[in-house]
Image 1 (tube, one colour):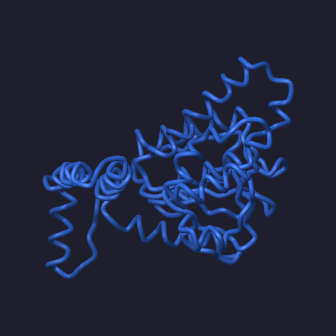
Image 2: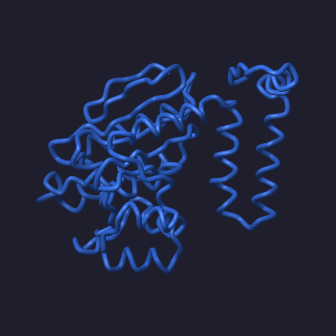
Length: 265
């Protein structure tokens, strides 16, 4: 895909099939302002519609102080109700574009992920984090509530009762807590965080891109249905892969004892 230039995001290809995306507002702990919402909406929509050779994305934050501190409250100070709702509409569409992105996205959480920052990480497919990362959905302290899928994604990650405790108390928790609860997949040393996330992204990118997209879709939508309905969706996704050149190439490569050359066809 052709990489655009964004005001609040830094994009760096890592090989032919992997992209490193960095939230790039370190002076405000990578807080989400309106422009970052617009930038993310454009990026995730663009990746889904025109992935090209891209097969996996790693999302992290600039600087050493935070992954993302959530919504930019300085920008919001004094906003009219109409302006607040208009801004949040941009955020909503950006979160939905991320959670429905057809390409796998790994969150590499290099510091605190609070409010919308945690919600952004939860919209990714899975999370790696540093030992110093702290997480919280603290919106109820501000007279609002999570509005970036937090009340939906956190219970799916840690269970309904624990999510209620965390959201209603607004308490912070650690990366180690997140690991024990199933929210975090791996805790990495700060100097190794992005490296390990990229290593996993390269392992993902070695696989057939159409298979990656179909498997991700089957997991994502299947979990929203009962078991047999989800299985029917899985089979529909599976059958769309049978008549592809990548499926034929995968079988040929296995029998010829060589590495497959997948092309996304």
